[in-house]
Image (cartoon, rainbow, N blue to C red; front, top):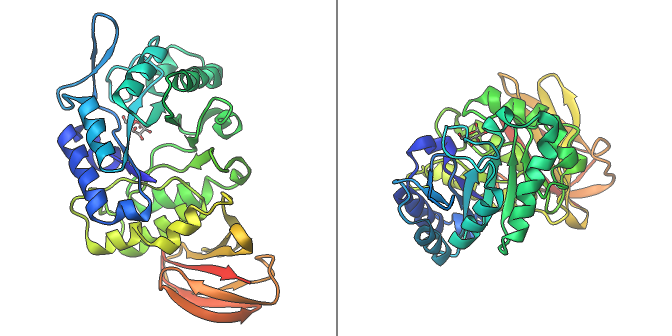
Length: 352
Ligand code: GLA
């Protein structure tokens, strides 16, 4: 769980913004809710010095100082590079400097690396990808500092089959998310199906960073976005301006009952159990025998939806808790019924 600069700031990210985001993460309750990583995406990179050591550009005058600052807040800091000569935004990449860069980041105190294929396609064949990623995975391990390794290559070559063996802790499964319903819904509902078996503690499918609070979806849709990512046991990397978010956005990002489902210790990725028209019921097994259940309505009008215990593999009476309403719904037998608004969700924790 954390934050990344790209979705909101893109090339406008700088050290001052990163510090203010870290401050905000502490003061607005996100840190207490479990958000830890403050991640700088592309456009921080400068040139290499005469020894080949990668320098930050003028937007980041003192990376070590910035890392110290973020650490002083009880948070961790992430950075971004590419295995190619250039990053996606055209800045210096790590090609032929992999070990040197890993040592530089470790010396700065970096805790997380997002490693983005980009121009690597101009110097490597696609089938070399697992080895190219492993090269950096090994370099990070040899750096002497624990650094989370985030693979970003848009799901090419079934990364879920080899990402963990390359040292990856998470891997993007698709192209870039956009702050629109169709993009979020296609990625979240459709493109993660079948990948459940590859997710687990230490190695996760990554449906991309959150767009919650960036303004092009409404509150109902952002709740669905958060719910779906939690059902998927996805990394929760906020992508909005944490310094100025509306209270309803903060409530979505910090809903502890939803976060507990995402972060559940079993580490199981949820999946669709039934589908009718534009409505879908999803389930996610939780520690101790509980089940998270989400009733999603992708359609354009409200629908009466039913989740049956039979579809969920349950029988008998179960205690039902609505994790958005923060309300107990009693001990229920056979099925749960609710009206779900257009693009909305009703999300439950069901316990014996
Ligand atoms: C790619 C990645 C994005 C972002 C940009 C930065 O598009 O998928 O998440 O990192 O590059 O240039």
